[in-house]
Length: 331
Image (cartoon, rainbow, N blue to C red):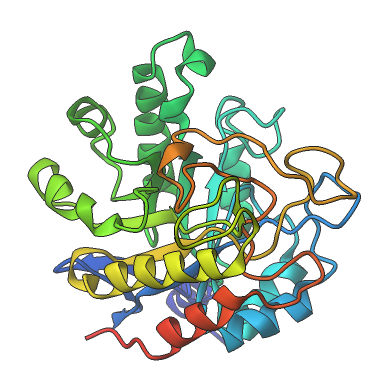
């Protein structure tokens, strides 16, 4: 017969987290092992559709593994344990992002984000909890005062860290956060930044070091494969070589400074035909905040950012990312 203490021990073992994510000397640790996020942003939407689904997940995971990707960043929670299990089986971690207002579906304004965390916090495919996506470009969502968002972010960060002390809480900020943002949202463990500074993302490191000693990562970096104008080097129109050249420089900048960041997420895995017009066709145009930093035409053509196209054909940049990620080892 088991003693009461043995019974309590069994309960603890069953309920204990199977993953522990920490930071030590600006290095991300997963169960005390160094882990550098070689990431991709992932929001798969089929041709003719406008909502995400995972019908091509098996093929996508195979391509990701080939490219050396070990982490994906998703823009809304994955409420399907079978999908998370597939990520786990593939050895790919997931950064789960919570939006502010998603009509009460695991969002911040309704408080339902906590239901998701309670449901999935023991799933070790999940690496980190992330709040928002470059909301600083949209103060109109917060009564015209972006500090209202930072205050909400701080409260939610504290709640999450009580509910799930085994993981980190981050935020995907549009480029560099201000001193006010850092002061208000002081409990955020790490800061993600969507950085579009042509092909020179490393320019942010010195600025960040003057603001904070906390670790950072690139929540979005990259280039699209459509040129809205010709340059001396690249022709107008679909131009995979321009994308590949830009991504090679961008990723090199990031990996060569791996002591100053804990990872990066290329935007994005597959082209998104739902973003700028008829979801059954690949349209040019679309809009994105701060898009003038997009190489090499200063315009974010929203449906051309994939490292593979909508049919999972590899673009030229796929091998650029593969060569960079598979040859990189954290020190």
